[in-house]
Image (cartoon, rainbow, N blue to C red; front, side):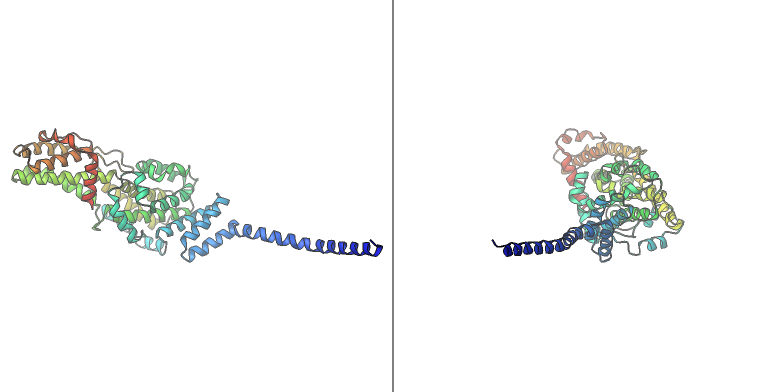
Length: 410
């Protein structure tokens, strides 16, 4: 090759090298830009801004997803936990619009008793469609596994609770572990840790909002379905006990008395099964979350007093219910003796012996009553079996009693 050719090739090479050297920084900048855009987009601050925009637009699921990403990068971000709790609540259909103002405006007053429970309800609740579905299924939910399967919204509530509870005050966590004992499996309080020295206002409001929304929903669905302001279980248990007691003072014939006795034992059985159910325990656990959160924070006095009155009214109603029920091991109620239930069972047995003595073995009333008393004994762990039912009870099954109670509840 000629000298000119060699020089020409050298100039081409040098020119290419020069161009490459000039382009390399641009290429690196471009490459860094391409690599950094997603990373920059996923910084905690950017995720927080985007989550807030989605939440403000009502896109709660998207907001929750973004906040979950944020917490995976920054688990100690308390603000993200608070916002994620509200995003989960929005996913459930519970939104905080006018929540605090409405609650504060309706919490004052000095009345006492079960009417105060109204101070804990009506502030925010699950959508009516969800409540209807829960009401239809609640009587068959007797285990935590069934709760998760039949009430999928609970999974979202559970995530929200476990998101915010590590930020509660230590005293709040202590109170929850003590008072919500029967709901430990449902709420998984052990995952909340030991809590902080104190909870700030945002944490308290988020926890209160979540528990009130859930309690208000379950109260309307499970505890006071007819909306008369009285817990249904309290009325049902009281009425049933009164019917059993009253049989001694009536001149009803054996057939009428047996019908009354059978209805009373069936009613008490249904009450006991409800008390043992997971939905009831979930409802009551919310009341204790409310009480514990309020106790551990410095919320305004009018809000705090109204909530305290509501919880006091609920506790009063529960004590009345538990005085009738051996099975009433509801959250925080560890001292009930079930004396009234034991007395009712004994009275029912004595009276049934009298009323059943004249019935033929093939009489359907005999068969029905023996079934009712079997289910009653199964629920309350008593052994008050009328003589005519001793051999018949051997053919009963717990499944039949559960199915019957579920049918009656609907």
